[in-house]
Image (tube, rainbow, N blue to C red; front, side, top):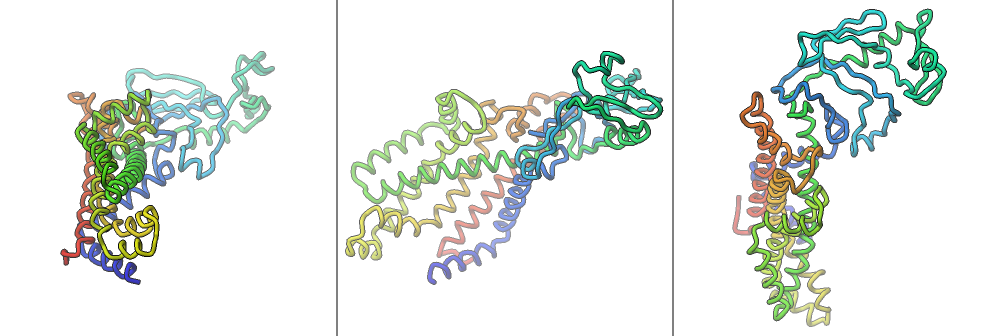
Length: 407
């Protein structure tokens, strides 16, 4: 009952801190966005990698007409869970155009980037998933379809002969293969939707931050608790290890860990960032354990013959959760910044995965070119707002857990 009322009091104090609550709300919103990911992204392909280089570095609010040319490959519609976690491959190749006209079996279009030229192509292969191998149709017509009496007869990717009304197919083509696209935040240097990549970057940053915090808390809590409770030689050794790790700049330590693993990527970033953050946790835990172990309830537990490890993990550690939560929010913000720095240097998340650090690096490479300001501003603003929110929440939690603070 006492613990429950104590946490209720802490929550009331935190709720009165409107700035901290604003940070908490922003973090929750970003977490929901990151979790839903592909389901709410305009570009739901894996890594939001569906783009066209002809529309690279376009400004926010850019509109374009896309001619979508079907890939003659098997396209399996995924479940919503698979789409949310891994995305859905697009069955089309994109061709940005400024205008088009359908005449018979041909489509005439003016491609972006070659506005003085009009290209012509057959639109039926763009609309149908045709077989690309040798078939009786191919031997006779040198293509796997033909038009007869208003019907389109064709061999699909599975080698099955099918037919469809030419008018119905034309209607489907204009509905599915001609698309008006709107890019809210413009496009990056590869012509990909910047808004979609920014949304997916939230998932990457929050995931790395969360797992890094878990690693740091587990390692720091274990070593800090042992050092603070048992003291003596064990405390000296752990403090020496903490001093060594603390003396090395975080980014240099992460680079060393990445080189030790001999690889780069998102999983290396998880581990490397986590293993550089545990010292702060261990320092706080050690101090808290040294203070709590002198309290009367610990002495009473010893008098009843309870073992040291049970006292430590069942009685002392539950009483230091408050400072642990505060330091965890601070580490979360630091982990996001460190991951962004690693990705900027090419040691963290690797392209085409849309990490915010990778996006800033791509924008940095485009500095000085036309329409490049948004490539840096938007991911930088996303990092700044998320880190600020964690810092505001951490400050609010610190005040809420401090019994000397009334507001």
